[in-house]
Image 1 (cartoon, rainbow, N blue to C red):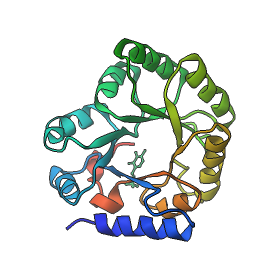
Image 2: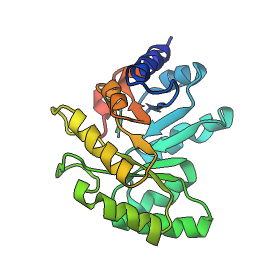
Image 3: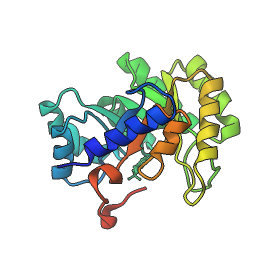
Image 4: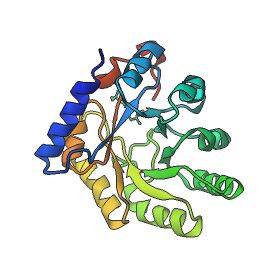
Length: 223
Ligand SMILES: *Cc1c(COP(=O)(O)O)cnc(C)c1O
């Protein structure tokens, strides 16, 4: 038994409520720090898109699991240190946390060497919070343009994590506007507490962890 059918039903209902086609929203199952059995159950139930926030943990978890489930798609949703960028591009299909120029430069070099690059989302710090990573909203257009045009990086979307304790709607709206005016198709926003709201604002990907897998062990919680 997993909560997967329930989460899928809630996504379908939110799509319908928003007048959007069924299946237009991708569920990214955020499996960080979850015990193996819970991840196995969600895999068994048919989920194939997963999110992790740490390169090392993701490598340990998915290295062999991916031999059994070779159609799994992995998204990196946590901050990426440049010294882990090489490992990240080898493991992930999508990196959602492109959040600074230095990382863009390193990814561009790796892309040239490898002749390929994961799809990239630019993370936007919509709440302009000091402790949170992401490009400031008023710098997003210039950064996205530089990544795509000067560095030839495959930026196809934007991602944000709204501030805690604030209504997320205005943050989702801001992110949707940034995607729209930059011609980006992918909009990653909404987590366990607010994914239905995010779908109403146009999310194409929702990142759901605890509502799907159960609460994370507090002793191993990461950002
Ligand atoms: C942990 C995490 C999530 C999932 O959070 P839940 O509230 O458990 O759904 C989504 N996005 C990012 C970036 C995360 O780090």
